[in-house]
Length: 386
Image (cartoon, rainbow, N blue to C red):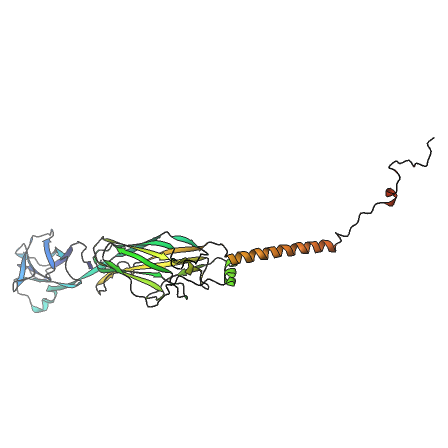
């Protein structure tokens, strides 16, 4: 990891390699200098015993002075030392400078002092790993022709939205917030589709900002014309998605301030919504399947030292509305009348065709001789029988 995540509970191991490229060095010492929000823990096992003591300047701790446990460091000898450090949990994000200097009691020319010093930068960052998930119950409903005589109660459908935010990152998410967007109208019509009845959060608080576009609260939504109902009934079933863009005036925005979200902490947001299904039947705009797409995004406080494990944690919740495929009364009467008319027309056409081929003109003429026969006997009466 190229940075140290604040609050992850881990320690820092500083590896130092001391090399004597000249003659034997007498009483070698390593000087560590680091800010006050770094704590020295211990020296890990090394080839030689290393003793460290706190270093102060004007009674202010500035680091550690560590001496190697032998009187001298032989020529061309290499010594590896590991220091274990810890970061104060209340530290602010930023860059910490750690300096390492080596010297000994031997005289050393100035030209050779440049490699006795090393400076390291420890980047302290907020490792942000927010996750957000959501669902709605129920997930779908059916809409169709409604009785609009009740102008006081038109929001007949109710739904419960639930959003969960989890801090799965290595650092605390400072001033975390969730922004929820849900379509509130069927564009381009001004009638309100839904209202937020109640919203609660397990952490922090939520509010609904004023919308930049006003919508009508009137329950008397205009009904489609007969020809529009007729075309819609015989049209192919299509799907329309109602979605929100950033700062969309056609959507209802909800902002929940969760405060500082600790590592592994979860917040739950519950929102109750009522919906007017009559708005989904306004034409033009309606389709056989209407998908109301809600979105939620979780973000921490803006900080240049934030590093995101997952960019723009986002979730999408779909609520489906299905047309019941039942014709309106006007369409039903029209279809019945047209069906009867077509049936009568077909019957008349069949009768006419039969008449044209002479089906109704055929006569059944009896043989006059058979009609005038005196009897059914095959022997004539005027002949004598001898």
